[in-house]
Amino acid sequence: FFEKGKPTKDIWYYEHPYPAGQKSYNKTNPIRIEEFEAEKKWWKKRKASEFAWKVSVKEIIEAGYNLDQKNPHSADTGPGDPDELLQQFQELQTQVDATRNQLKAELAKSLGGK
Image (cartoon, rainbow, N blue to C red; front, side, top):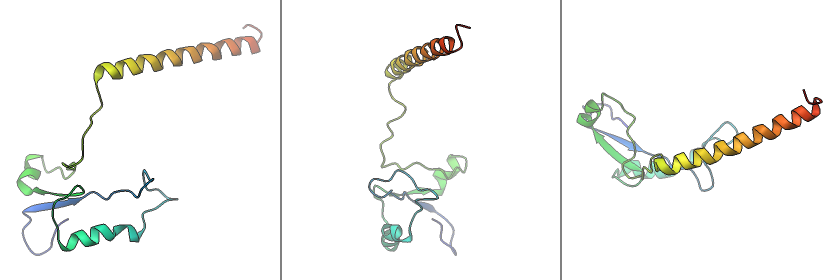
């Protein structure tokens, strides 16, 4: 958020949480004005919380003026353990190979062994 009329020293961010049981907004399930009550309440007495944080202009400059600043209060689990990911990939690849072979066999059978 930016304020008119004075130099920007800090930029406030607020991560709007999804309602319980909802993973995203879309055309058929849009955000509703009532869902901004938390932001309205926070705006009057801004302070850092699990959904709100501020970043100094100096930090923005150091980030190459990138305004896409991650919420420091949320846990970044990252992609996971490389060994576990590789194991999962290999298992999925085995399943894909087996399915492809089944499909090939069914097609050959249906087409008379061609």
